[in-house]
Image 1 (cartoon, rainbow, N blue to C red):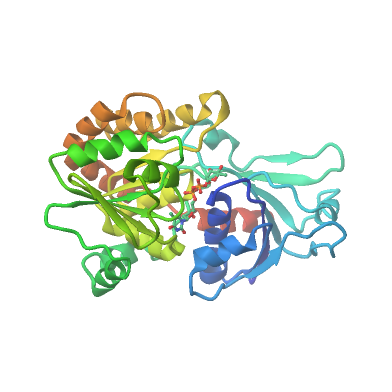
Image 2 (image 1 turned 90 degrees about the vertical axis):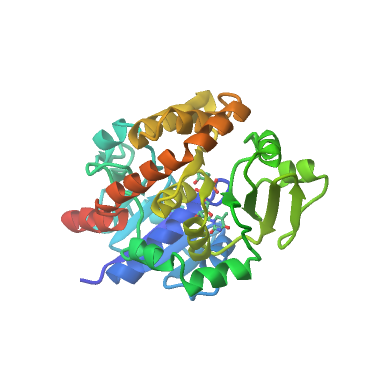
Length: 364
Ligand code: TRH
């Protein structure tokens, strides 16, 4: 049966909310044949994620005051990350109609309480609207992780292919022998300057590739001038190359091509796990150190050893980066094996879109 869904997304800051909404929309449309509309307050972000590929879904700007209300005639209404529907649409949910099924897509966390909350329903006392809570997660009892159907096969085929050489050439990435290729996507509070200094003095050469979306202040401070996309700077054994912000598909392929990926937030974090390469995750900064609890919960599940733990904690502001990096650097072969096994273990589970489709079908 062809279902229809509307995904609502209001961007708080950064790219993650829109990035997750976009991946889910693409997958529901492309793999499950759903008719999908994304209602979003920053539609221009979706164009950046899509690159040159035509969007397989309808994109609608968030309705402004007095604008025509979005219709409530879809089978499923997905509120991404706590976003409240526009007033007219919200009013249509009063009394808890069978359609649209109102589902909150929550933030990803590795914390154990996720499993107990996934799938719960609640009735709004004010008007009887019925909302369902869908929690992404790392276990079979959660909502799972976004992973397109052929993603792993595509990654394996890409490794060493002409397409990989073409992508790296297009981005001007030419790795010298022995040079470690690292991708960098982080928040401004990462101890980037101190880490770059470690790499500049290190025994092994590093090529750090930084999409034009983060690390601006620290890179400018370190090299004494702003690096424009396509430009490169060198200090000691370190080269840093600025590249443009990539489409999501190209960003995935870049992660598949690197020896080590620095990722952040939610969506790039998941993609680094599908890359099956070592990664350093920086959780989104939250009040009362909630991000450190999230990191601890994830490290416990990942089981990548004390060096990976110390590195991710130091990268997130808890610990000294110099010693953490040196120990992590020495442990990388073991971390690599763990990340590969972790990725395989996760890929053996069903993915988020499949679980969401089942979840909705059972309730519609
Ligand atoms: O941008 P983020 O920091 O987003 C965050 C998180 O989602 C966080 O949980 C949320 O609370 C906060 O926003 C508001 O990091 P994230 O989640 O990795 O999203 C980045 C998106 O950008 C992801 O979809 C990948 C995409 N991307 C590209 O498409 N091209 C690129 O070159 C890069 C660097 C990223």
